[in-house]
Each structure stands twice: as structure tokens, then as C-alpha cells.
Image (cartoon, rainbow over all chains, first blue to last red; front, side):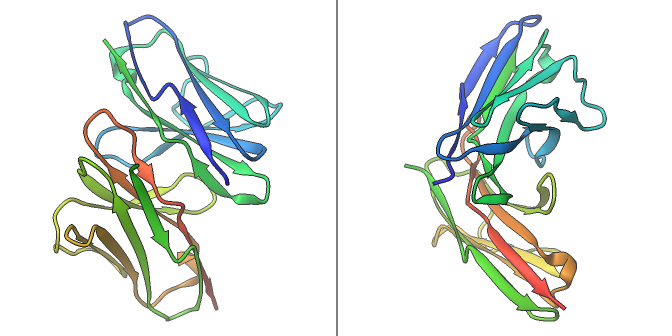
Length: 116
Length: 111
């Protein structure tokens, strides 16, 4: 149990386009989802915390107009990188908590975004 | 199928105890193994291990990788209540692929 999926696993896009990444909890209801990004050889950096049905809370330095997060249901959160630029190229990882284990984060496998 | 397995899943100790957390992996194109500490919010990076047999230390924490056994251990000596957290192990594979995380070990240190 407690499986989190992300889609797509890898995406390459042109500069200026928008990319949507989905994060799904497959077998539990995720009241909270977290979005991280990870640059090579660095730790995960929390971007935002998303609670179902409410606006996401963004970490300092993260542009909420650029990284749109929607948590419309208890099993799905989306991150949209708008007007992507090469510096947005990174691993984006989501995690989810809720159900029987509210204090545990279950990570998705990550999405590799490459902006050309 | 690539996988990372951590043990134990949870551990309760008293302050001052020494603990050893285990991580084993089966992955193709292994590049490095990472340890994270997760408290209330984002996991914080602890160690990255790429070479077998070389111990990395940071204060009371240390870790070592055994590529022959496809495993790593994280040691914490003289534990403190502030060490209570979930410790995540993850494996980095070839470039362009996502990290594979273990499910974590929940450590509780009582005073």
C-alpha cells in the first residue's frame, strides 16, 4: 500500500512552453501533497505544500505564478511549470501523506524536466 | 525491478543509545546512495555515498556503502531526542532517471 505515482516520468519541452506534472496517490487519500525539486547532487528542496481543496503554500523564493499547483481531489495534485526556461530543468518529486499514516510522506518516483 | 529496502521500518530507543539503520538496494546502473532525514517538512540531505568502504561522518552520524553487499548503514551514536525523525535512503541511477527511495525508518528517541 501507500503508492504514489507521477506522470510523466520524463519530459522535454521547448523554452516558453508550459508543462503539467501529475502526482497521484494510488491506494490512499492524500490530504497533503508536497512538491520538491532536486538539482543534480543536491538534496530535495521543498517547493510547496498542497492541501486538498485549498491553495498551496509556497516556500520562500518559489514563484507561485510560475509553478501552479492544484490539489483538486484527495488523490491528485498537479504542478504546472508555466513559460518554462532552461533553468527550470530539474527533477520534480512529489510526496503525499494522509490516510492511515498522516505523518509519513510517500514519495513519487519523480519527473525529469528538460527545457531546451 | 529496481528497489530500495530499508530496515527496520521503525525503532524506539533511549537517549544515549547507538542505532544502526540499514538500506539495501537492487538497481541497474547504480550511481550513488543518499541518506536523508525527514522531520516535519522537507527531507534534509545527510550523505551521498558513491564509493564502497569509505565512511562519511557528520558529527554523531556516519554512513558507509558496501557495493559488494549492495547495502549501506547509517549509524547514530549518543542519540538525542532531536534525532527523532524518518530516515530515508535513496538510490540515484543513471542520468535522467528518478531517484528510488526506500520507505524510510522512523526513529523515536525517548528521554
